[in-house]
Every structure is written in structure tokens, then in C-alpha cells.
Length: 218
Ligand code: DX5
Ligand code: ZN
Image (cartoon, rainbow, N blue to C red; front, side, top):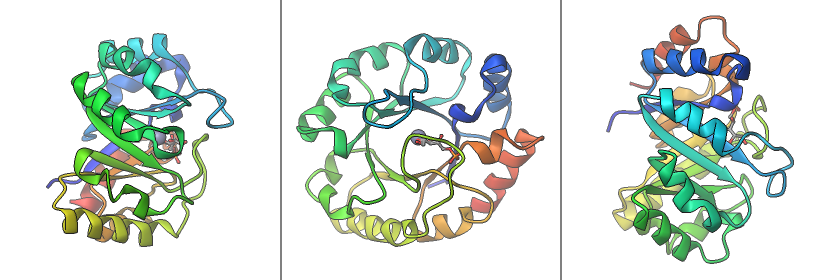
């Protein structure tokens, strides 16, 4: 499968949000990665439904929503209505993960599960065949611009092995601290989708940065 780039809108200039969304539309990026934080599951609040609605109105690519919130079941239908193609919930935030995954799929979206850096891959053994994506956190969730945690490579290899062993169709997404320095090694370990926030938006030529990342991984 083609390897994908998903710029994280968390690092965009919110004063020029439409401009930055159009930039992603025009670039070689594949998805929009949208981080929703509630200030409870993670120690930060990002943005909520009205902002996602504004993004959706201009975005012309797949909308990949990463929920860093407690009790995400409350908002599954809302995110479907707002145009999410993929809805990812945190393993650590879901007591009844199987039920949550089924509800996401019943609402017409693809279901993702995110794992914090300390959470072992083994917890996915009995859900891996039911999900479409694993979002592997390569930083502690809550903030953009953090340094990549090197232990991620080992976890990607373990996850790739689990996916192959179970014949799951699940994609591996890496989220946090992705740059041109680790992109190739991540893809070699088995990653399918690379989220990149600061590395894209803090560069003076984001379109070129995305094209460069894309050329590294394909
Ligand atoms: C972190 C978010 C990430 C973040 C990535 O909690 O889930 O998606 O925006 O940003 P960078 O690429 O700057 O680490
Ligand atoms: Zn994210």
C-alpha cells in the first residue's frame, strides 16, 4: 500500500486556518489529522466541534480525527456528522473498547485505536481484527512540537508482526515528533501513515516539506 502523510492541523496558524487547510488540499498530503483534546484525558485543550466544522467545509481530503478525550462514546455521532472519515479513540480512555469500536463503525466511520507510549502492543491482541487503524503515539499526547520517543520503532515492529499474524487489514499510524530524520526508519519498521504537525507547519515552505516527506517514504 502507498504510504501516507497526514499533516496535523494542531500546528496550523489558527488565524489563517482556511489558508492552511487550502495548503494541505494543494499539497501531496493524503489526510488531515485533527487533534481533539479535552483538558481531562490530556493536560491541554485544543479545539472543538465549531472549528472542526469550519475545517470540514474546506478540506478536500480524508479527515482523520484523533480524540484525546474521556468517554468518547458521547460524541461518536457528532463526529460522523462533522465529516470524520476515521475516528480514533484512546485505548486508555475506553473501558468498553469493543463496544466503542462497533459504535464508530455503525456510524459509518473507520475505527482507530490510539496507544500511549507506555501502553504495550499486546493489549490490542483481541481487538486488532476489528479495527482499521492503530495510532501509535510517539510522544505523550497533549502537545505538538515534542521530541520523538525512540522506543516507538520497537513497538511498530511488534504491531506489524501482530497485524500479519492475525491477517488484520489495520493500518499503522505514527503520531508525534515525525520529521525527515525518522520517516524512512518508521516506514521500514512497518508504518503506513505518518502524522506531522510542527515539522510541516513551522517550515517556511510547507508544500515542499510535505513533498519531501512523501518522497522519503515512497
Ligand atoms: C499530540 C497530537 C499530535 C501532534 C503532532 O498529542 O496527537 O497529532 O499534533 O504534532 P508534532 O508533529 O508537532 O509532534
Ligand atoms: Zn494526533
